[in-house]
Image (cartoon, rainbow, N blue to C red; front, side, top):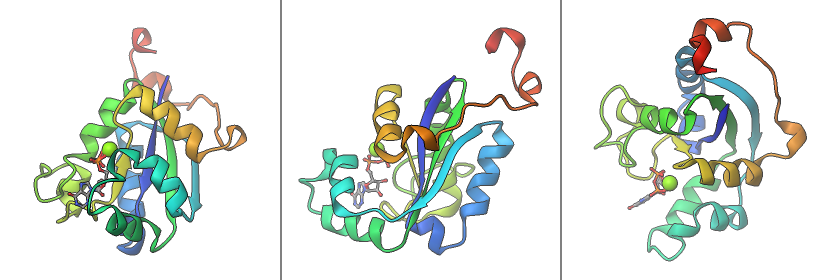
Length: 153
Ligand code: IDP
Ligand code: MG
Protein backbone atom coordinates (compact mmCIF):
# COMPACT_ATOMS: atom_id res chain seq x y z
CA UNK A 1 0.00 0.00 0.00
CA UNK A 2 1.11 3.55 -0.71
CA UNK A 3 2.21 5.91 2.06
CA UNK A 4 2.21 9.68 2.45
CA UNK A 5 3.36 12.25 5.00
CA UNK A 6 0.92 14.54 6.78
CA UNK A 7 2.05 17.31 9.12
CA UNK A 8 -0.49 18.92 11.42
CA UNK A 9 1.04 22.39 11.40
CA UNK A 10 1.14 24.82 14.34
CA UNK A 11 -2.04 26.39 12.89
CA UNK A 12 -3.82 23.06 13.57
CA UNK A 13 -2.27 22.56 17.02
CA UNK A 14 -2.88 26.12 18.23
CA UNK A 15 -6.45 26.20 16.89
CA UNK A 16 -7.30 22.81 18.44
CA UNK A 17 -8.07 21.26 15.05
CA UNK A 18 -6.03 18.08 15.55
CA UNK A 19 -9.12 15.98 16.26
CA UNK A 20 -11.04 17.43 13.32
CA UNK A 21 -8.27 16.53 10.84
CA UNK A 22 -7.58 13.09 12.34
CA UNK A 23 -11.33 12.38 12.26
CA UNK A 24 -11.46 13.10 8.52
CA UNK A 25 -8.48 10.82 7.90
CA UNK A 26 -10.08 7.99 9.90
CA UNK A 27 -13.52 8.48 8.37
CA UNK A 28 -12.08 8.30 4.85
CA UNK A 29 -10.63 4.88 5.63
CA UNK A 30 -6.97 5.91 5.57
CA UNK A 31 -4.70 3.97 7.94
CA UNK A 32 -2.43 5.81 10.38
CA UNK A 33 0.86 3.90 10.44
CA UNK A 34 2.95 6.43 12.39
CA UNK A 35 2.18 9.50 14.51
CA UNK A 36 4.26 11.67 16.82
CA UNK A 37 4.61 15.20 18.15
CA UNK A 38 7.88 16.99 17.44
CA UNK A 39 9.45 20.43 17.45
CA UNK A 40 10.71 21.44 14.00
CA UNK A 41 13.74 23.70 13.49
CA UNK A 42 15.16 25.73 10.62
CA UNK A 43 17.52 22.92 9.57
CA UNK A 44 14.79 20.38 8.85
CA UNK A 45 12.57 23.07 7.28
CA UNK A 46 15.35 24.09 4.89
CA UNK A 47 15.31 20.47 3.65
CA UNK A 48 11.56 19.98 3.74
CA UNK A 49 10.82 23.30 2.00
CA UNK A 50 14.01 23.39 -0.12
CA UNK A 51 11.90 24.57 -3.10
CA UNK A 52 10.98 27.72 -1.13
CA UNK A 53 14.26 28.66 0.60
CA UNK A 54 14.93 31.54 -1.83
CA UNK A 55 11.42 32.98 -1.58
CA UNK A 56 11.03 36.25 0.39
CA UNK A 57 8.43 34.70 2.71
CA UNK A 58 10.72 31.81 3.75
CA UNK A 59 11.76 33.35 7.14
CA UNK A 60 8.06 33.92 7.92
CA UNK A 61 7.31 30.32 6.96
CA UNK A 62 10.04 29.04 9.31
CA UNK A 63 8.67 31.22 12.12
CA UNK A 64 5.14 29.88 11.54
CA UNK A 65 6.31 26.24 11.48
CA UNK A 66 8.45 26.48 14.64
CA UNK A 67 6.18 28.54 16.88
CA UNK A 68 4.75 25.38 18.46
CA UNK A 69 5.30 21.64 18.08
CA UNK A 70 3.72 19.86 15.13
CA UNK A 71 2.26 16.36 14.76
CA UNK A 72 3.68 14.27 11.94
CA UNK A 73 1.68 11.36 10.60
CA UNK A 74 2.44 8.59 8.15
CA UNK A 75 -0.75 7.66 6.29
CA UNK A 76 -1.37 4.51 4.29
CA UNK A 77 -3.93 3.55 1.67
CA UNK A 78 -4.49 2.87 -2.00
CA UNK A 79 -3.35 5.94 -4.01
CA UNK A 80 -3.15 7.80 -0.67
CA UNK A 81 -0.77 10.52 -1.93
CA UNK A 82 -3.33 11.76 -4.46
CA UNK A 83 -6.31 11.06 -2.19
CA UNK A 84 -4.88 13.02 0.75
CA UNK A 85 -3.72 15.92 -1.45
CA UNK A 86 -7.31 16.13 -2.65
CA UNK A 87 -8.63 16.13 0.91
CA UNK A 88 -6.09 18.88 1.79
CA UNK A 89 -7.10 21.31 -0.95
CA UNK A 90 -5.29 24.21 -2.63
CA UNK A 91 -2.32 25.82 -0.87
CA UNK A 92 -4.17 29.08 -0.18
CA UNK A 93 -7.03 28.44 2.25
CA UNK A 94 -9.02 31.28 0.70
CA UNK A 95 -8.95 29.50 -2.65
CA UNK A 96 -9.29 25.93 -1.38
CA UNK A 97 -12.67 24.40 -2.18
CA UNK A 98 -15.11 23.97 0.73
CA UNK A 99 -15.13 20.36 1.87
CA UNK A 100 -11.32 20.21 1.83
CA UNK A 101 -9.35 20.62 5.07
CA UNK A 102 -7.89 23.98 4.01
CA UNK A 103 -11.17 25.05 2.40
CA UNK A 104 -13.04 24.43 5.64
CA UNK A 105 -10.49 25.55 8.25
CA UNK A 106 -8.09 28.11 6.72
CA UNK A 107 -8.24 31.72 5.51
CA UNK A 108 -4.51 31.88 4.76
CA UNK A 109 -1.86 31.03 2.16
CA UNK A 110 0.57 30.23 4.96
CA UNK A 111 -1.42 29.17 8.04
CA UNK A 112 -3.06 26.34 6.17
CA UNK A 113 -3.39 23.59 8.80
CA UNK A 114 -1.73 20.61 7.09
CA UNK A 115 1.15 19.53 4.92
CA UNK A 116 0.54 16.71 2.44
CA UNK A 117 3.23 15.11 0.25
CA UNK A 118 2.73 15.99 -3.42
CA UNK A 119 4.08 12.86 -5.15
CA UNK A 120 4.86 9.23 -4.34
CA UNK A 121 8.57 9.95 -4.76
CA UNK A 122 8.50 12.94 -2.39
CA UNK A 123 6.34 11.05 0.10
CA UNK A 124 9.05 8.40 0.48
CA UNK A 125 11.74 11.04 1.01
CA UNK A 126 9.59 13.02 3.46
CA UNK A 127 8.55 9.99 5.54
CA UNK A 128 12.22 9.04 5.91
CA UNK A 129 13.01 12.65 6.90
CA UNK A 130 10.55 12.69 9.79
CA UNK A 131 10.32 9.06 10.97
CA UNK A 132 12.83 6.47 12.09
CA UNK A 133 12.02 2.98 10.73
CA UNK A 134 10.92 1.72 14.18
CA UNK A 135 8.40 4.57 14.48
CA UNK A 136 6.40 3.18 11.55
CA UNK A 137 4.03 0.25 11.98
CA UNK A 138 2.98 -2.45 9.54
CA UNK A 139 -0.40 -3.84 10.45
CA UNK A 140 -3.57 -4.84 8.67
CA UNK A 141 -6.67 -2.99 9.88
CA UNK A 142 -9.43 -5.50 10.70
CA UNK A 143 -11.95 -3.63 8.56
CA UNK A 144 -9.78 -3.67 5.41
CA UNK A 145 -12.20 -5.91 3.51
CA UNK A 146 -14.94 -3.35 4.11
CA UNK A 147 -12.75 -0.48 2.88
CA UNK A 148 -11.72 -2.02 -0.45
CA UNK A 149 -12.90 -4.53 -3.01
CA UNK A 150 -10.83 -7.73 -3.13
CA UNK A 151 -9.12 -6.69 -6.37
CA UNK A 152 -8.13 -3.28 -4.99
CA UNK A 153 -5.83 -4.60 -2.27
P1 IDP B 1 1.62 22.98 -0.47
O1 IDP B 1 1.71 23.01 1.04
O2 IDP B 1 0.20 23.15 -0.93
O3 IDP B 1 2.29 21.78 -1.08
P2 IDP B 1 3.92 24.60 -1.31
O4 IDP B 1 3.97 25.48 -2.51
O5 IDP B 1 4.73 23.35 -1.30
O6 IDP B 1 2.36 24.29 -1.05
O7 IDP B 1 4.32 25.52 -0.06
C1 IDP B 1 4.60 24.94 1.18
C2 IDP B 1 4.03 25.82 2.28
O8 IDP B 1 4.67 27.11 2.25
C3 IDP B 1 2.53 26.14 2.11
O9 IDP B 1 1.70 25.12 2.60
C4 IDP B 1 2.40 27.41 2.92
O10 IDP B 1 2.34 27.15 4.31
C5 IDP B 1 3.72 28.10 2.60
N1 IDP B 1 3.58 29.03 1.47
C6 IDP B 1 3.52 28.74 0.14
N2 IDP B 1 3.38 29.84 -0.61
C7 IDP B 1 3.36 30.87 0.26
C8 IDP B 1 3.24 32.30 0.10
O11 IDP B 1 3.13 32.84 -1.01
N3 IDP B 1 3.26 33.05 1.24
C9 IDP B 1 3.40 32.49 2.49
N4 IDP B 1 3.51 31.17 2.68
C10 IDP B 1 3.49 30.37 1.58
MG1 MG C 1 4.31 21.31 -1.19
